[in-house]
Image (cartoon, rainbow, N blue to C red; front, side, top):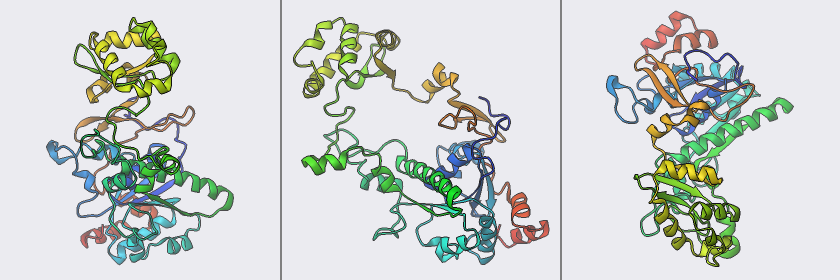
Length: 405
């Protein structure tokens, strides 16, 4: 899909108005998801510099970040100094006509500015406020600064990531922030559904550490029942074999997942060693798990005799799950990505066009999409404040002269 025009079909959240306050990734990723599916997202930014994501990422010519077109997409940018009474009053007007407020300030900041939920919901009882923070709005850690790496560490992800003989590693992305934003968006939709029945809004409290904890599978339960503390295991899941990345003759890495008995039998047939699936060392899930290291070495020795394309073709023929370990250029060249418009090219006023991931998941009747990339700082200030806050052009100009917008 080339996003050179507004989607012809309104998204499922068409008609929903979202005010986004906050910076960096966690809160704005929630806004990105809602905007991808048709909500009008009005992002409030500080007039002096805006969201730091405008500067983050690998430096590009013309002073633009490659990160901002993605995290700021489908949003309208309004500059407003929330640390001034005038800015707070305008924010209150905008929130009064909105369905959702997304914020990721440190807990207590909005209350200090007179924009706490009790005050805002008195004017707008149906307001849903999605609050994203490191540790949530309550508890002894609530007031602490919290970033993705802290939430990933305390949520359990950092300890089990990496090679067992080295210090814990981190994922190559701020996964804690994205998980928190995703949970905030999910909670927002739950709260809006509840509002359909009750007419009343509520707070969605999404903590980064809890968002990470929620995807930690049976880590807590396993410890509680057996006393086992899960450790780092590198590229494998202990006891799940074969399921690893294997080398090929042409220098690629191919991931193969054949840990079920039927799949393992097919893999053995592909390897030309059908009897291997009956070997007591590998016959059955438990046996393969106990002999995981030697089995991976055996499979890796075989895959290293084949080029990646030949290996993948053979795995497809035998019905064994497999895929390359991709980098960005591999994604852009892949026919599956192309067939499903997983990556789109979006017109950009500075770069001409930018490529980025599409809106997911896919909906058959009311799909999401990328309508425009992250806007210029304050690009929509005048239009939004005159239409939604009832200000005249002269009033907006006066506020601009004072540094409030």
